[in-house]
Amino acid sequence: MKITVETIVKAPVAKVWNAYTTPDDIKKWNAASDDWHTTKSTVDLRVGGAFTSRMEAKAGSFGFDFAGTYSKIIPNELIEYSFGDRTGLVEFMAGENGVTVRVTFDAESDNPIKQQRQGWQAILDNFGKHVEVSQ
Image 1 (cartoon, one colour):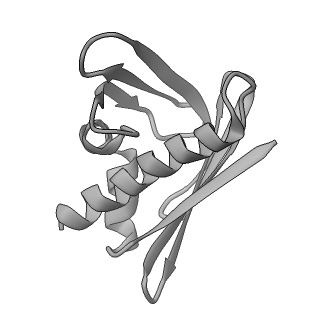
Image 2 (spheres, rainbow, N blue to C red):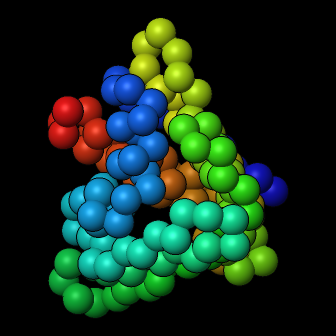
């Protein structure tokens, strides 16, 4: 099953793209709630290149790595990637009201669909706020 989340970011598409693909920016927005943060991020933005993010509870109780490999890159438009046996797609669609960022990914079987959708949506909402505030 695929899950899709999206947000509209009121900023130029190049700025939105850069914030999504720059490790220093990723560490600032990549969390689903205020009690989590991303402590490390790497990006090798090319087909066959790898990415990693280390997400941890601020209290130190838990953490995990999110990692994958890019399979298709169209600058300012599209990122496709695989992570484990799952795939993801990020679309950047510039419009009159800003840039719609849509993330579609394969659901996993450990957590309920609703929880996965809420977590990924919260991260994407944090992303949008980060970009708009840093203009």
